[in-house]
Image 1 (spheres, rainbow, N blue to C red):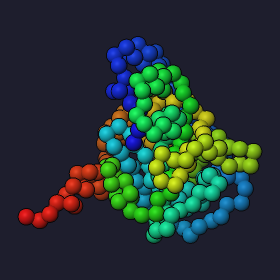
Image 2: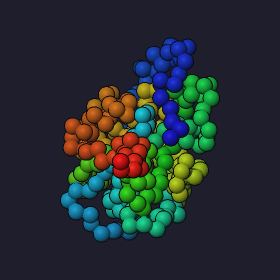
Image 3: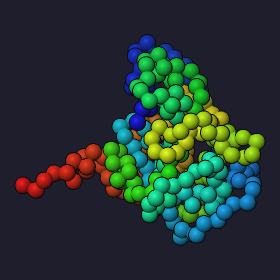
Length: 252
């Protein structure tokens, strides 16, 4: 994943980062009395039960969520027009948030691009990717943690997701480009990206809206977020390339 983190910055950037410490850490969240869910007729899918599986996927720096697509749509999530699933037994969607340039560029960022992204408020995107197979097989290079979330918390989660995105006059999310992998999309977002408001803050607030008790300030790093979800019942089901290597080992 081509993403950003302050460890990539040269020492000259520290002064700017200290100034940005005073910026708002959290993304704005919708008022409980207001609704950011879909106002048009929603195609309801079969109920998924009292709890639903939610996955946190992480490499060394970046985190993402994988959730049942029908769950969030049932609760009013507005998906991009034309969002389709490849053939397979599951209907999950992987979601993450971050700096627009980092997602759109196919190469590693130049140092000045990293500097601008972290030291100046920059445009952001949400990436949404349909997943039709086991998460551990699709995201085999990442660590994968699985937990159970109360189904009823889907409305607050969908409201948070919708509140981050920009919409066109027809009420559809504004797509700016294909996803960085898979057959998904990059959606234009309302909120600026900068340090300390980085990708893991979005993941932390998403989990918070699902009902988890998350200390967002302690979730700036991927490991910091994973430590918190582990304490709340999430279990590591895949250890990234380590597990892949074990599976490929030939018996003695």
